[in-house]
Image (cartoon, rainbow, N blue to C red; front, side, top):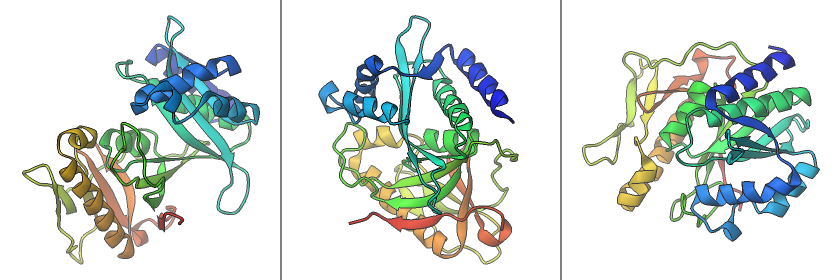
Amino acid sequence: MQHDGLVDAAGAAARTAGVSVRDLRADEMAAASALYAEVWGLAPRESPMEPGLLVALGFAGGYVSGAFDADGTLVGSCAGLLGATPTGRLSLLHSHIAAVRPGTGRGVGTALKLHQRAWCAERGIGTIAWTYDPLIARNAWFNLGRLGAHVEAYLVDFYGPMDDGLNAGEESDRLLVHWSVPPEDQDAPREPEQPHAALTVGDDGGPVLHPAVPVDADAVTLAVPADVEGLRSSDRAVASRWRSAFRDAYADLHEQGWRVRGFARAGRYVLGRTTDDPGHTEDHLMERNA
């Protein structure tokens, strides 16, 4: 799909969502900053992206966009900075933050991402990268299932301690994903019929590990809670157990040569052996820098 096709796809997604998406002006950055604070459960002055930083980011050639509803109200925003691939080439956009106002209709997140992809294509940028909490099922499905991004790394406690309304009290483990700007042909993700379930949801809602993978297994799944954010509010101890269990299971399977291949709508990561898909980029495990 050429650049014009990506622009058309972005426009169609915006119309479906009932919004218009465009680059933000300097005088609109305060509204974007306030939106980020609202979604993160913070006071406006504690926003994870203060207005001046957004202005500087846009001025320096970075990506700062907004989605507006029919009344002209900002209901979504996304910001990213130019970065380098592992080879050192400046051909990557790191999409640092994105937010959609709660209660906004479906499809705004998709409209923002497709606008971002068209923006990158216009500038010759080949890859978009971002991180997300692997325990949030809806984000896993959106990133891996709907968009078709690939897992590149598991980042242990990536941001260190966080004190916002979404992450306070939790270690900030993240999955790093890469999304190709030129659309890739891919089959719809499917869960194997009889995978080994290495991590499941117990009767109490907590994690249950099943680490012994049969030698003849052709796929492994790792379950996540249906609503880990709600669980963090109702039972912080169980939510913390999920962080530890998922990290341990992921690391153990990674060492055995298993890699994430997708995410099933039922709420499970699907992993395959590296030898089953030699052309697939291998993700790697990374510890947070001291």
